[in-house]
Length: 199
Image (cartoon, rainbow, N blue to C red; front, side):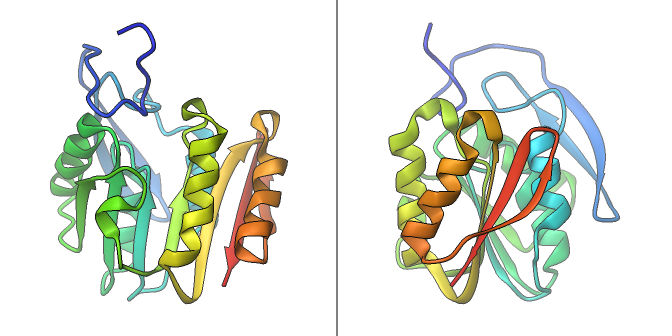
């Protein structure tokens, strides 16, 4: 499939499975990855920046939006031991890997489900939504994920987005301001910017 990428619902790309270990916020975590998912060789610098600054309370409800193989969701579950974490992705292979990585890291307060955006969590609200947006899917998709976040945040909730500056991070930050009424840049490193909107 020539135009296949990690936003493909049913990826066909074949590739050797990989495994790596990374320490996130004091927690040593293991991940299995495979072809057809985002950043399968290592923890990408955007996600690393997001995880370094993600505010998660011990009993928060967290949504890892576009979870890939589950790094943010697994880490969030460790940070919210009395909370509940939901990992969603349109990519079926990513969801299967996220489920495997939840088990590999003995995470019991999280679940992974296949979902086009917020489809599988309709009616649910979260304290934290975290997004490393699928830029390759196009701006219309990314804008929809930002706009629809307002209907899925609890009062006092936080929407996080990390993006490359050269891939339109500033414009995405402004989109968050328009959709959620507030945005702040909380970190910047290695060509990435991290934004948060608090409602």
